Image: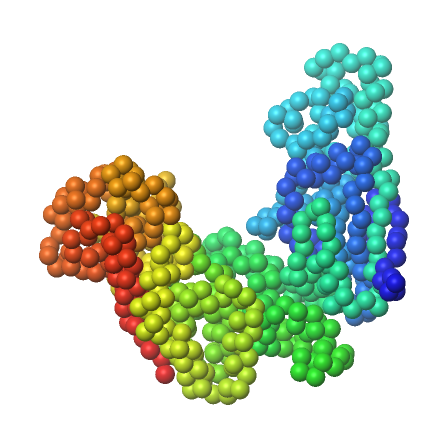
Amino acid sequence: MSETLFKKIDYTLNKLLEDVQIGEIGLPEIQRPFVWPNTKVRDLFDSMYCGYPIGYLLFWANGMPGVHRHIGTDSKQITPRLLIVDGQQRLTSLYAVLKGVPVIRQDFRKERIQIAFCPRTGQFAVADAAVRHNPEWLSDISILWSKDTSRGRVVRNFVNSLRQSRTVDEAEEERLAEAIDRLYDLHNYPLTALELSSSVTEEQVAEVFVRVNSKGTPLNQADFILTLMSVFWDEGRAQLERFCRETHQPSVGKPSPFNHFIQPQPDQLLRTGVAVGFRRARLEYVYSILRGKDLETGQFSDERREQQFVVLRQAQDYALDLQNWHDFFKVLTLAGFRRADHISSTNALLYAYAFYLIGQRDFKVDNFTLRNLMARWFFMVSLTARYTDSPESRMEQDLADLRSLTTAQQFVAHINRVIATTLTEDYWNINLPTALATSSARSPALFAYYAALYRLGARVLFSEMTVAEMMDPLSHAKRAPLERHHLFPRAYLIKSLGIKDDRDINQIANLALVEWSDNIDILDLPPTHYLPKYLQRFSEKDLEDMYFWHALPPGWEAMEYRSFLEERRRRMAQVIRTAFEQLPEAG
C-alpha cells in the first residue's frame, strides 16, 4: 500500500470554530460564495440535533509559515496553518449560525442565515414572518451562542413569551428547557477532519480535491485555485471579488465595472489575467505560477515565484482597469452585440477580452485598428462557437500561436488570417445554413443574426422601429418590446399542415422579431391571411429592405413549409455574412 498522505484529527465543533476565528484554519468568507440554500443549513442542524454524522472535513497543512498570508477580512492572531479543501459549505454554515455572522451569496450580497427551532417538537425551520410571529418557535438559534446573553436568559425569555399566548406548566417548562439545552450543547458535537500532510503538493491536493465525493456542493478546479489564491495572494483575490461584486450594481457619480454584457465570477477574471500575463489558458498552470514553477523549464524557486507574482499582479491590474474594461465593450457594440442574453458564451467574451488586452499592451496596436480587428474576431468566435467545446485547449493553442509574434503588424495579420481560414465560402454557404437548422433559443448562429440586424440598421419586421432601438438593454417593461413571432403560426402548422413536433414548429427559420402588439394581433392566422394587412404599411422600397433583413423570399407566405425553412436559412446566412463583411477591416 502507498504511504498515507493524511492523518485523522478529532474536534469538537466549538474547538473547530475557535480555530477558524483565530485563523488557525483558513475559512475566508471570500474563499467561495456561499451556495447552499438555507434549507440545507436547516437540515444540517436537524441532523446534528438527531445525533447523525455529517461527514468528514478535509484540511491541508500548508507547511509554509511566513510565506502564506492572512486569510479573510477580520484581524487574525496567527497565520492559517490549515486550509479547508472539502467541507467549506458545512463549516461556513456552522460558523455563520453559531457566530451570528453573515455569509456572502453568489450575487455578492451579504445575508444573515436565521434558523428557527421549535423546542416543543424539536423541529427546525428557516425563519420567515410566520415563524417569527409564532411564540412556539425560537426564531433565531444564533442567540444561544451569543456573547451578549446566556442560555438561561434565552430559556426564560422564550418561556415568558410563550406564556403570554397560552398556559405553560412546570413540567412543560422543564421539557422546553431540556430541548433548548440539547440544542445549545451542539457546540460539543464531535467532528472528524482528515488532514493532508504539508508535504503533499498542490497538484496532489488538487487531485484529491476534485475526487472528493461530498454530499455538499461539488467542488472544482476553479474553487481550489481561488482557495490557494486566498493563501498566496489574498489582496489579489479580494480585488477580483470586489470587481465582480461591483459589476452587479450601477454606481452613481463614480466609475464602476457595471455593464450590460457580463457579471463575471472571480475565477473567470483570474483566467483573463493568466492569459494576458503568461499566454496560458489552462487552470493547471495557475498552480505552477503560485508555487514558483518556471512554465518552460519546470524548475521551482522562491525567486521565480516572486517574479511570476509580479507578472500576475501587473496583468490582473491591467485586466481590471476600468478604462480597458469599458473600452472593450465598445468592441462588442461595434460587432453588433448589445445585450448579455445575446452572448452565447462567456468564454468567447472573456477570451476576446484577453486578446484585446494582449494586442493593446504587448503589441501596441493602435486603438482604432484594434477595435475593428477585435470586433471581427469576436463576431467570428461567437458565430462559430470557437470556445464551446474544449475551450481551454482551443484558447491554449490560440495563445500559443501568439508567442512567436513580435510586432503589431504580425499580430493584426495573424488574427485576420485565422478569421479568413475559418469563415470560408463553404462555411457561409454550407456550414452556417446547417447551423441555423435548429430550434435552440441559445444558438450562436441566431445571436449572430440578431447582431447582423443591429449592424445593418434593420427595422423590426412590420415596424418603423429599428432592432437596435428595440434591443435597448435598459428597457425593462412588463412585456419585452420584441417578441419572436412564428411566421407560420403554431396552430396553423398543427391543424392545417399536421406538423406537431416542436423542433419543426420552433425552427429558427420560422421565427422573426416583431413588436409584441403585432404578435398579439397575428394570433394563429396563416401568413396568407395576416400578411396583406402589414404589407399595406410600407412602400415597395421599404418592403424590399425588410424582406432582405428578415431573410424572406418573395411569395414566402404561400411556400411549402419545409422549402420555406431551407430557403430562409440560406438567406439568414447571407444577412449574417453581409453584416460581417461590412465590419471595418483592420490591417
